[in-house]
Length: 268
Image (cartoon, rainbow, N blue to C red):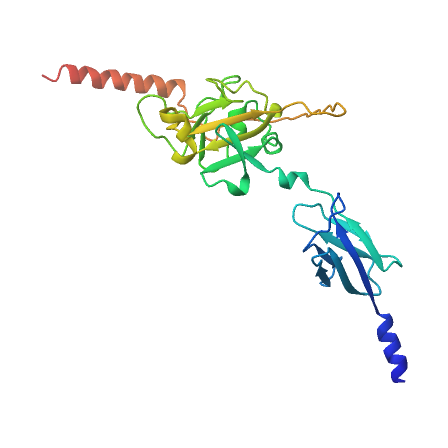
């Protein structure tokens, strides 16, 4: 009876081993190997090898490592696997535009906020300044006109720095200073970075006193041409409207004004 129980317990698990490599067949140290939808897992050693005991019902291994795309491997009847992970380019190239260069996002110490093209086109707006509203910390967007074609917003980085002279931030498009940028199609923008503190805007001198907005447009890439079509519909309306008087009330108030003005002029 004891022998039968031991055999049944043994049949409920099995041991799987293997090696995890990168695209150049180099072993990956510390890669995580887990059973999908389970807490069972292990990591690779200095040689990229691993060994794990999994339930007999396990069907899929999930392999992951920092900088590489997660890969799922079907277990089947195999007990040894050679698993290759592909580099996840998006993670390694997550950069921020800083003044006249770029830095990796995790190494930036200055107060810089960025937004990418995917976020910009989420709002059905007609110009670029309105597309930035609510998407960047430290940026205030103020729209004072709702006229069609004249609905561009004013941008303020960390509030209004002065009430005399120019209060708008310095705008650069691909490194060139621009007075107007609302004619740029948001679909043509790759990234927008806002430099907010003195350490980030120092290279621009006094012109960067109100902050700097860096706009980088998209560049052509090798490969098959792609055509994207986007259709958007939006309605813009006032958040608050004044309550107007009718013609009779207007005439009555004008008469009262004239009466009060007459007596004020002839009081003496």
